[in-house]
Image (cartoon, rainbow, N blue to C red; front, side):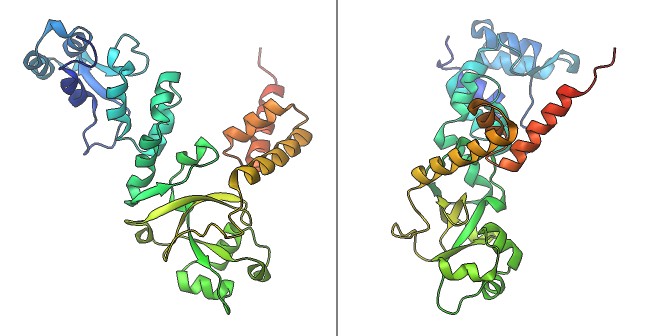
Amino acid sequence: MGCCGDDDGIYKQQLIPNPNQHDSSSYCFTQNSMSALRNPSMGTPTNLAGSSASSSSKDVDVISPMNSNFFALTCRDILRSIFERLPVTDLARAACVCRFWNLVASDREIQTRAFISPWKLKDVIGKPSSGSFWRDNSLGRFAISHHILRGDTVASLAVKYSVQVMDIKRLNNMLSDHGIYSRERLLIPLSKPDHLCNRTCYIEFDVYAKREVAVVYLEGGPDGKNSCLMNRSTTTKRGNRRVIDSLKRSMRVDDGTAEYYLSISNGDPRAALAEFSEDLRWEDREIPS
């Protein structure tokens, strides 16, 4: 019987981790269970459960990507059932196993569910310019959009939202408090996860902050006429081209190498230079004979 047959429910129950267990990287089966799963005709679901309970602990196998003969690891439906329960960090690791796992793990619905699950968000609207955006759903990935009103100052907004002045400046790429007067809005760092509960966030590239963030609007929603929300695709491509050209000059490498180090550093040029320097040091060190 194929992987889409009637026994799929049994396999999924065995593969899907217990919600009360936090280790999602290991799924254990006995030797007899593995044989039954590889060849369902060897036993019924009752025999499968019985053999699992009666086998000794030394016969236990751990399912891993190395078990290439285990068909469940290449069944899209079963993989989706597993990946839908993984946090973003484990989902990113799963995407690195092979092309097929990457294809399943890169599904927008799975990524969105993993991204919003810890914060009980209602939905995420928008498409990030890079798939690496989904790999980090820490509180620092989110921001509140505050429309600047007459009399607003960085200090007053810091008090209003219970955050630090320097955190607001850092997030908005501001060198001084006077930068507030040339903008229509400021991004405010989130200090309380409660602001995310049952809300919709919007993936936006802010041209002043020069970064892509998941923005929460406490009142209303995004305004398409806002000057800080320029054409994100055009702005991002232009900005990435400048960054890559700068890295090429600093590293003295070609486009492909600069793009590679920028991608593994999640778009951070300083981190890309640090990774490149570390690789150079590793290559230059003497290998003991």
